[in-house]
Image (cartoon, rainbow, N blue to C red; front, side, top):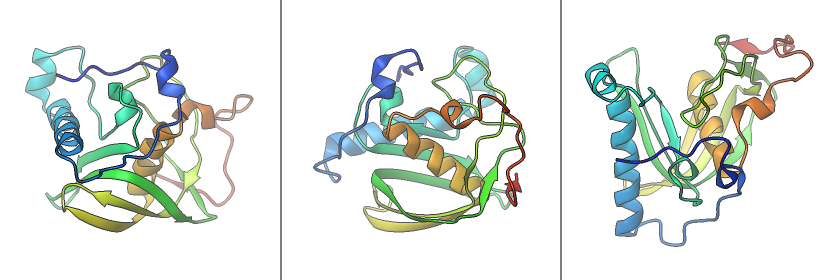
Length: 181
């Protein structure tokens, strides 16, 4: 089982390096293991049997002690499908001026303390990456919640945690024209 690196560890603040061989067996094995961790974390019976495991929708390689530009995302959609990616060397190539935020605030598998406040994010982004699930390079256009999750995980690759983006003086400061999700 993977061990989650917590936010007090220096490595979580390090900038990750590019993966030189996105199609390597080692990369795919780690991504598959990370994806399985997310799936397990969303299973109530698994969490009951493993009380230290928190439910998550995204996981970046630095969170499991590997400072390489890799992340996984997995969560159910309203229509009984799932959003899932195993991204290598993701890069945000465009983002909207319009912002959004989660009204309930963000959380993180690497952060045990609660950090209340709005985390402003771009409402719409386009990400370019190699997706090991499909075995090819992809461009992902994401809106709202999908965009928030991708930005949160990509931040990890740059040593940034969600609470770094909360306004310290006014955590619930209204963001003009932002979409509350």
